[in-house]
Structures are given as structure tokens and as C-alpha cells.
Length: 220
Image (tube, rainbow, N blue to C red; front, side):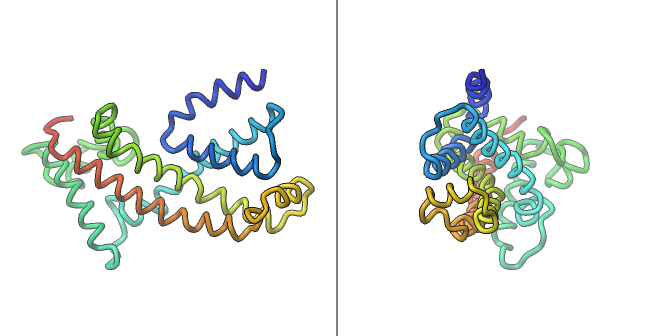
């Protein structure tokens, strides 16, 4: 019964951007640590860890990406060129969409033509325009999947590192032995740290692509 429930849940989750890649990585680590998955409950553990990692990653957008590249980003000289490019793209998309009504992102936000969060944001509206198009499949889907996957690894990899470093539980010792060099906590900590710039850079590339592709559109 549990296996059927897992399969029922896993199907829709695999449609989430980046989720299959994270699921494959967590599954591979589990198999490396413990060998075969011979019961339903380990499948549930793998699925839960993957789902939790994916959901927790959502909370990294505001403190990481939005602070650097969001509409109300910090002014950082080292990122000025990148920030200006993205700000200009947002304004160009707004001008094309709301011709003669508003000309900047913040003006559109102030007049409630777009929302600051939820499905009514400029980004989400642009995504809805591009989905199920050839452009989405060929130019947007891959960087989006990579950015979501990297984001989902920022929290769990350091958590794995802490567990491997400080826990002496029998299961952890078994995992450490099965993982070999991957059982070193430094590997997972380094992976979590590396995932941060990957998430930021690929997310930036994804946003600039989406706004660039939507820019010629004349209406929502």
C-alpha cells in the first residue's frame, strides 16, 4: 500500500522544475550508502528528503536571489552591470505590455498592474506566456531546471555534512562507510557552498532569457 502511495505522489512531483534531478541525486546517494532499496519505507524516506529539500529551497529566493537581482535589490557596484541589465529588461517588458500606460516596473507595481508576489508578478506572467512553446522547451526549461536543482541542494548538503561530521549513530556510521570518499563531510559542505553561486548565476540567466523572449509581446 505504501509503495502505491509513493508512486501516486512521485508522479506529479516529477513535473516540478528540477525535482527529478534532485530526486536522482538523493536516490544515488542513498544507494551508494546502503545498497539496494528493498522495502517501501526507504523509498518514502528518499522521496520525503527530496521533497523537503525542494520546498525549503523556495525560501532562499528572497534572502539570496532577490537581494542581489530582484526588483528591490541591494546596490552593489560589483554587480551593477548585471543588475542594470535586468532592471532595464523589466522596464522594457512593462512598456511593451502596458503600452502608453506605464513605463517602469515600479510604476506598474504602484498602479497595481502587476503584483509583488504570487501569480500576478511580472516574472510569473512572463512564464505563463512562454510555457508550452518551443522557446520554453529549447531555451528556458534547462536553465530553469538547473536553477531549481541547485537551489534545492543549498540546505540539505550542509545538513548532510553536519550529520556526517557530528553524529555517531549506527546508521550514520554505515552510511559513511558505504559512501566511501563521499562520506567525508567536507565534500557535502563544499557541494552546498558551490550550489549557491550556481543557483544565483543560472537563475539570473533564466530571468534575463525569459524577459528577453517575452519583450516583443504586446499583451498579457
